[in-house]
Image 1: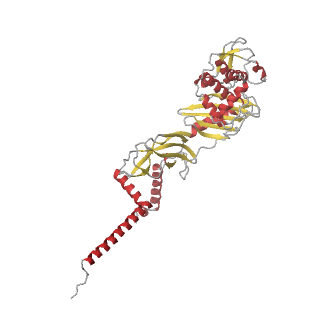
Image 2: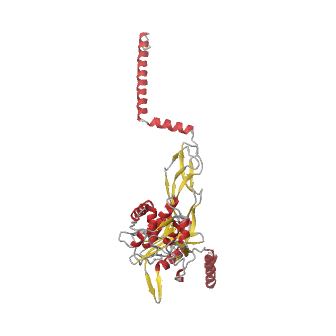
Length: 457
């Protein structure tokens, strides 16, 4: 009998208790995992807005989406596109930052209750100062003045806006004006705003301006200097201090009664860098405190991303993935290895051993010669329906062609062809006919020589 069962009742209990403690001590802690060992995915943050998006700027992957492709009113988020086209004009030499522009009569067509810095018809301001007015206090008249400077007219500029949106892959966007004042036909989506903002962020000056909490625009021919405050309360706490977030950088606010409160922002913590879009958020009263949810929900969305995700190397460069049979070579297979490292932002509790690898080979087997580094297919890594990326599969080593096996293969192929069998049949019939003919001739010679084949007595 086993020694454990020979113990008395009390001793058996004590031994079982020690065994339990030992088991717990030796069992590794697995955070974010259920009892069945499955990864517990981060809870849905349920962002309080009509649409929202969180994108990992390092990989370009969506981390969170809510109605990310819905057509929503962007209000002054529109000015990101206006800035993008202006910066492109500067980049191509059509404008310069220091070029002076005279405001035309277009500034008188805008409603007085919109965002403004009080630009007057005939006032002269540099392109750079107009960009400051556009992006920091969100001046509508600056958008119109820049539109005319870039394209010659507001209508031509709007055409350019829609053309650029199409080039960027925006499928749920249509612009009617350069400033974002409400129009039923003027809309975009959180995902499209990400695409537009990403394009604008390629110009360093864009983020420098968007990340400025206060700027002083020099005096002009018609105005004293202007001190302008950023409408983004996550950056500028001079008006309302409650929302200031030192991790946030840029980008642009927007609000109308029809659009609600909108905000595009970026934030960085350690090695994580996110871009968020919140559209259609409400302004609510909580007791005596007014909450503008575009700001509060943006911070909550960033914190959710920072707290629940981490970067993980899912594939190492040169990591063996599969073996591919090789013919016509003394080497009977090559190893397909990962052609590059694959790093992705994943749920914090995800373990590398539970991710799924989907392998697509160009062929189930390959003929020699095979070169080292030759592409053999791709491998895609995913978990729970979320695809984290794909890399090429490459041959880890070469497989040389065997001339003997090549000749042998050709011989077998020739032997299998119907024409080969037909030719062989013809040759066989001819050989048989010649043999019969030879036999007849031999028999006739034997008769003519008197040989009968009978030994008579």
